[in-house]
Length: 85
Picture (spheres, helix red, strand yellow):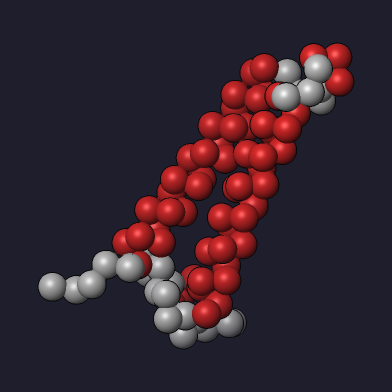
């Protein structure tokens, strides 16, 4: 269980504890944020050029950041699902 006074104190930085509802909720929230960031960038890229809010360099940077975040979060969740030997 996560210590609400100091959440980082009880977290294993290497794996998600799927039995800890607060940790799982935080993980899903972070994953959703990364997904929404990538979706926002993609939606902007699909607009006609004159209607875009971002340029190509920002599209590339923001999409790479969101993609890296999702990859890291998924790897973190998968490690938490590993069964001990």
